[in-house]
Length: 318
Image (tube, rainbow, N blue to C red; front, side):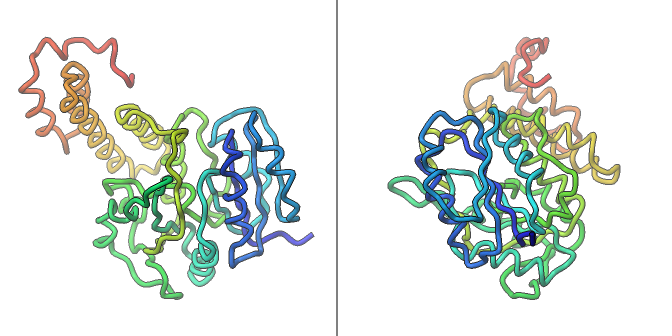
């Protein structure tokens, strides 16, 4: 049996109300040489009936015990047969030309192992600004036009360029990977909500990366999104970067270490302006270990009473 060109992996947990629209956005892609692997993490909603109503032979479904989105993606990776791998969250949807544009770029550029695209967020009443507005650094990253004329191929060290950005370009639903670039890499089950950061950066370290400055993905915002308290999200980024620092090449560890310092300073800033001086002082005291943000941390610590940062028993990240 011939393998498909693209494997699309959709982890799902209790998003049956969005799942048909998500799957249809894949099955209606202009690039139709694909398989769709829906990995259901023990849903208790209408998911089974939604899947049963779809008869397209390209759809393959799996029911597993609940293990989070990263665990579902890992299961899908074990089953995937395509030359290219794409992930899609089950509450999101793709525009019809997404896979064709990204895969055409990679077929024209054999050195490129990952491509991400611009996207919008939407809810019942509004469409929010394009994501690339929050990635102004992309305009200054050394890059050339790709052979298709639709995207940009990053020149030099993709890992260092993308690690330095204020917002990480790591949204799973926006990316297409070459399966050979992923190899045996998997999403780290120790991470709760930043497993996508850790995974994408590990792949970026191994390959050339390109991007499409065109909206090809629509990310749904709704009351059940896995939205976290800002401090929790920064703490999870810190955890992911700490693991990455131990696994990346020696030549990249300094850059990851510097990015960790920025995260500790950002955590302190968040607590400081949310009138949590004890937590702010603890975060800024951790930032003192990172030369790039030391002056910033000291200036903020100067306005906190010394007693507030004595002792760290309740530090949110140990």
